[in-house]
Length: 191
Image 1 (cartoon, rainbow, N blue to C red):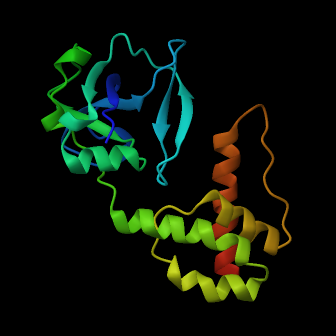
Image 2 (image 1 turned 90 degrees about the vertical axis):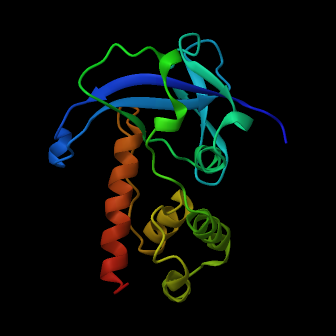
């Protein structure tokens, strides 16, 4: 297996009770990416293991670690979309990227079952042609935390609804609206 350079970069600070979650910790937020392009862009993995480009990284200041040096479950999680890495701290810190202790990072581990559900859902969409087809298929993916874009688009199309439009390049907002639309439609269908 090829060794890949993985970059860890402190990108922010989340103070105690940030977002009202009663978390007793302060956190340094850590971005994780691979294949920096040198122009402020790099790549991250999505849940299916595909790479996508994102902006606002500085790989020259980031901590670089070979994938073989990472704990196996951490590398698996990174390769399948784990993105919420954080490091507990006792207040805002001037911690430098090179001082990031990989062993102390906190992140949401990706469950292989979640990856399997995602791939099942994505691969089934070409065979779904009616609402009844989707209703028959839905029990296989109802426990999935992450629903593929293809499923959301198919449900919106089957419901004969207009998909949300991207306004001013805000793809994330359009995706958020699409997820609300998907949830409302499957509830209306009794799922």
